[in-house]
Image 1: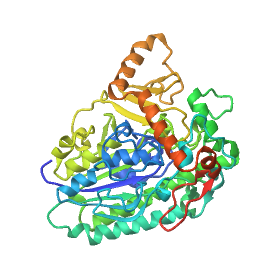
Image 2 (image 1 turned 90 degrees about the vertical axis):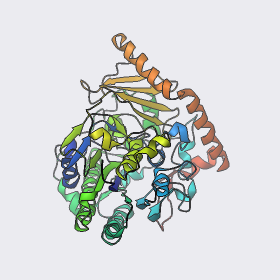
Image 3 (image 1 turned 60 degrees about the vertical axis):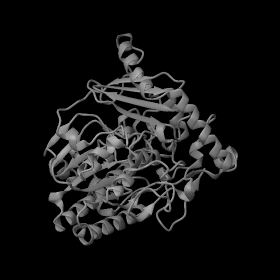
Image 4 (image 1 turned 120 degrees about the vertical axis):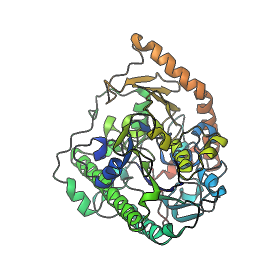
Amino acid sequence: MTEPLNVLYIMSDQHQQKVAGCYGHDFIQTPNIDALAARGTRFTTAYTNSAICVPARAALATGKYVFDTHYWDNSHGYDGRVKSWHHMSGEQGSGVTSIGKLHFRADEDPVGFEESIIPMNVAGGIGDVRGCVKRPMPPPLKRSKTAERIGPGESSYTEYDHEIMEKACAWLKEKGANKNGKPWSLMVSFVCPHPPHIAPQEFYDVYEKIDFPMPKMSDPDAPLHPWIHKLQRSRNHEDFLTPETKKVLMNSYYGCVSYLDSNIGKVLAALDEAGLRDNTLIVYTTDHGENLGARRLWGKNNMYEESAAVPMIVSGPGIPEGNVSTTPVTLIDVGPTALDAMGYDDIAEQEKLPGKSMVKLANENDNPDRVAFSEYYASGGDRASYMIRKGKYKYIHYCTYEPELFDLESDPEELTNLAQDASHADVVKEYDGILRGMVDPEAMDELSFQDQSALVEKCGGREKVSAKGAIQGSPVPGQKAEYLA
């Protein structure tokens, strides 16, 4: 890259990779995301570094893995203790502005932004402490707002997203075009399609007449891996859904994705109106996916494609147009990408960040043998889980449980576990070796458990925390958190 670029980084929450037209979905309407992919490079093998909001966003901010920073779960939020790429950029004179959801610890923490507009952070600085209760796990839910809050209409999240869109458009028109000298970076972070799955009427109506296929492995007798079975029983939203309400929920989710796409389109139009498209790199991704009923799971929390895979699109000057890359990437690559685009490509190396600029990756030959790594220590899992994606295989390691291995070329739906197949023993050994070359999984499992247990005790102990219930989504600015046992 010759000339430094501005960076417009657009993020959503809980957008399943498969639910986008450019990723091959057969009926979702995402024209603005699709157009962005057509004008840039779409990464097909893209993953979160942890399939839950807070640690995923901390990994993105720091450019480092969860095991290295100890932002384990939705109660251990990013606080500025570990240097972020926002800090690194600011040190070079290029301030980073955020608009919308951060899901960091607290508004006042020194997280490196030049300005943070209408931020959403974890409630009370500690968020969902019930998710830290483990061994044994807390009892199943007695009610599910995920199953109850569905259908057409408005929610505090859709209204918040509208405000985020308006403020982003105003910033681009009023400030972005008037920055002098140094390139800028703007993070626009929407909440949709995160629950509650309530879609504005016009977007809900788009899908109302579609006959949705039932999610895979939704039969109560379908076999689940033991770790997944515990997750399903802990986050048992399926128990409160009927075939009829499942249709409404899915209709709402798709509607929220199209509502998100509409807001993205308005932000991109504002970028064009400000005359900034030709000197701005655009990145679109999300923090993690959504199970959407697969394996009787709703939400995220696991390493299967529905939950762990994310859309990742990079577009702008110097990026090949209409390009599709199979090189594995993860959220920790976003920081090096932004720094590279702004002309600070040596900073990521100096700071020893493990990620790599997707500007460079998009312009190189595909490297499917690059390793994508994800880890999970948070709610619903009694022990830690890890993912290694390299080439056609995905390896999932569960502490104290048998692993899983999937050939995603022949089995993209992850229905056949090859880990116990003697013919794949060498693959299991190789991928387990890659994992242990990065992290001691059992040691991190224990360390995370000790940190979580200490927080639970600080908050009154497991009985008090369990009785208070799980937080029903972080509140938007100015509202209070709601909990449900």
